[in-house]
Image (tube, rainbow, N blue to C red; front, side, top):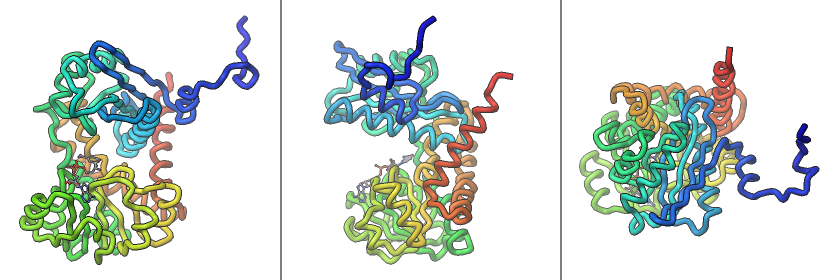
Length: 365
Ligand code: NAD
């Protein structure tokens, strides 16, 4: 009989990759290398209790491979939480291709990557992320069917994402102001790109008083004229007189500096990783009496749109599912108040609770 020893009892040196993997509780990591095409990629499958792991592929020129590994582990874990809290039958995964997206793309590289995705036999479903376009995914699709976000399929996810953000913002308003009407509410939308502009359109229709900011002058001019929004410079965003701050551009905009300036009572926007440091700023926003709508629960419309493609569901289903973000955010906010725990922690708990519960359903009879 083979004697199994605890690692502490052996002379084994801990492998930093395996150590990182077990710390974040990942199921599988696939390292992909192909010298002929120049492909260097990592696919991380975090958790597949709820279903196949879905998450986009990012192409980025990382400083080194360990940075790429850290990023893919963090992002794939985030997808587990996002998919779970959104009530989707999807697990969490993500992939990164290490390289310059402006100079290193080729049909061969993406097809080779597609072969690696295919080798996971549907355990991981890929999609677009930073640095990747629909054409790249068409190449990936030549080697695997486990890909969504293809041209002519579910299409641009931004309208669905914006709808979810809008509904979640209303849920916060109901909790903070006693009514979910946004008529007359002062909303600062930072970044009027794909999601930001759709959000501005819904808010304008409801009669919100809008202030916008962006780094692109032409976009700003067009959006401000179309929806009657006031424009502010990118450095003045945090000093604007506002009820609601909607970050729809960058991450980490809720930090020590901005929190000392922000006078809003709700933070609800599409950007990922809005809290510079979850543990610090998640608590600080609560202490300031601000309701923070956890970003991954609020901006789940994008993945809901992908799921509609996986399951061949109509666009109307995706929009209706995004409307349910109202209820999700309401539950998070009221539980946060009742338990006196920051909203980001409640969202994490709710995501973990669903995985635990459904994990039991999936046990063999
Ligand atoms: P986008 O690139 O179309 O729009 C971002 C906008 O922000 C651009 O117009 C850009 O010029 C502007 N911007 C950049 N830096 C800025 C700054 N310092 N101040 C003000 N504006 C600035 O991106 P998007 O698809 O609209 O996504 C917006 C955010 O939402 C991103 O953080 C993205 O990760 C997140 N998100 C998007 C989706 C989706 O469906 N598109 C889904 C989930 C999350």
